[in-house]
Length: 193
Image 1 (tube, one colour):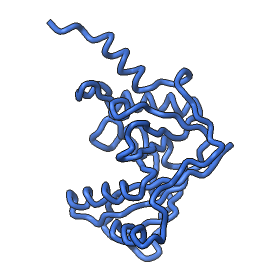
Image 2: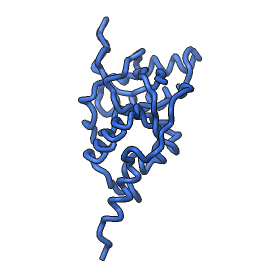
Image 3: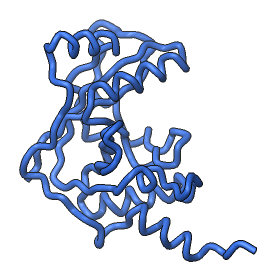
Image 4: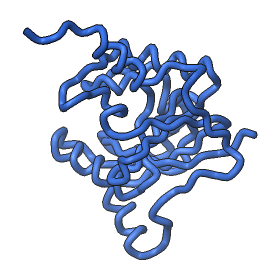
C-alpha cells in the first residue's frame, strides 16, 4: 500500500523569490552529480530536521550561499535497508570499493524490484533515507536553516519524521545490493604480493 513518507533535505540557495515554484525542484537528472559515489543512488535525505539543518549550514559555509532545509513528501510502497555506513558509502576498511556506475546499477536494480527508498541501519547520527526517484517528490515546505532551527527550538514543529505503517520492507534477493557487489569485488581482487 502506497503511503506518503516525509523526510528532510539540507541544501543551499541563492535566495528566496516570492511566489517561486518549487515544482520539479528535485528531479532524476540530479542523481550522481555529487562527488561521492553513492550520490548515484538517489536523493539523500534524513528523517531528522537537525541533520538536514547541520548539512545545510555546513554547505552554506563552504559555498557562501543561504542554507535551506526542504521538507519533502514522497509516495512509498517498498523500502529496503542497507546495513551500516560501509555499505551506504561503498567502502571496505576505509577504502572506496564502489563507483558512481556501481551505485547507478544498484539503483536501477532496486527500482526494477519496485523499491522506492533506502534506509540505513547503524547510521543513527545522520538517520539517512535515500529516495531512488526524486522526480516523485513534492516539496511541502522550504525554510532557511535559521528559521527551521527557531521553529524546532520553540517546539512549533516535531524534530523527526517516522516511517508510516503499512510500508513493505524488502530484503535482498531480487535486486543488487552494495554488500553483494563489494563482496564480489573483494573475492575477484588479486591477492597482495
